[in-house]
Image (cartoon, rainbow, N blue to C red; front, top):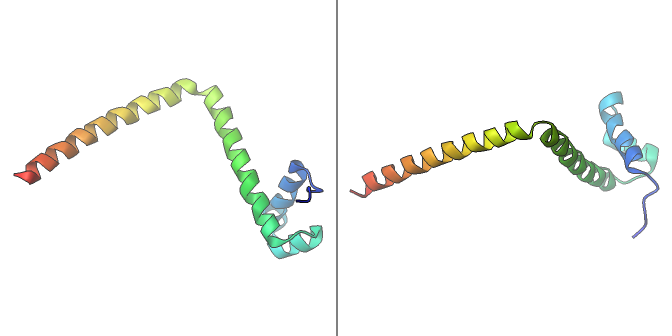
Amino acid sequence: MRSSNFTDEKKRQILNERDLEGITVREICKRYRISIPTYYSWKRSLSGIEEKHSVLIESNGSNQSAESENQTLRRLYINLSAHNYELAKFLEK
């Protein structure tokens, strides 16, 4: 497989051109001589990296709030599970 001539930063710049300049994907691909599937492959792979990166940044800054949210969600899950169990028992009668 051939290695890319574009760095990740350059790929991000190319992907952002659509939002900034409002041009079509086809025009971007013509300008940089890449295929349309390559454009969407870059978009998929780089958006995954950015999402993971933003989650790491958020978790480092607000780890305690995430823990408290997890505990709240656990309590809600337990309450709903108990309610579901009671409804199932009632319907069996």
